[in-house]
Length: 243
Image 1 (spheres, helix red, strand yellow):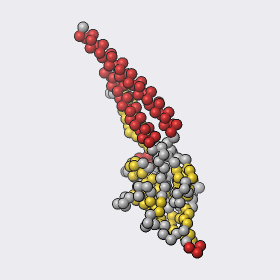
Image 2: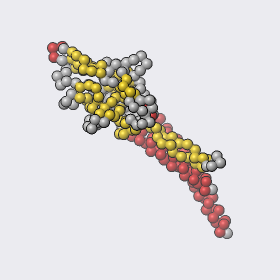
Image 3: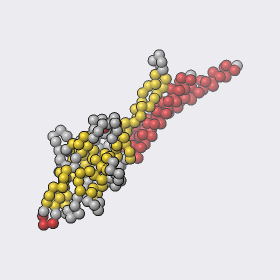
Image 4: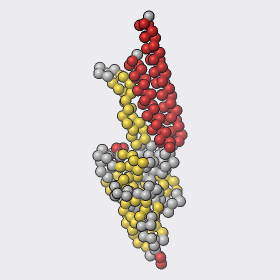
């Protein structure tokens, strides 16, 4: 009976973690470039091979491609395929994101909403128009029709992106498990491509997340009933021993 109580209690704890993760996914469903997470669990095995309950293995980020949508931002970019934009914070630390909602700052750098600077390109203040090709090449036009190349936006890829550390929203940090970032040029036939004037939406769909919540709630309730049943059995056993 103690074993049954423990098994049901660990199941409740597991489903609570699952619900928390799904709720976080839903809260960020409208964040550009956000990637949803999923919890992983395993059976807790006692010596001798008998199951005791459920143990949490932690969450993992799901890097499925989000839908690409047209945007109104003059410097918006979307990645079609694997890879990340490399951005730098105020201390020069390299971070990685799929959020391509950039705007030009006074110093000509492209920055996101968190004020992280996109690596590899600066837009002169006298540039009239800017375009980005599918291979990341940045070209600007100036007064009197003059045009010139401003550089190339390179993407970063990882051997094990599922081991990147999620920091805030759609921002990630490399870890020893993810491996070091590898610079990739977009536009190759089998590689990622850049789309100028578009953004990648979150890969979290509200309908799927709501279905996951219903499934997790039912599993939580089933485990809660298991706890109640085990508790009642213990109560009866205690009364019998006293009698």
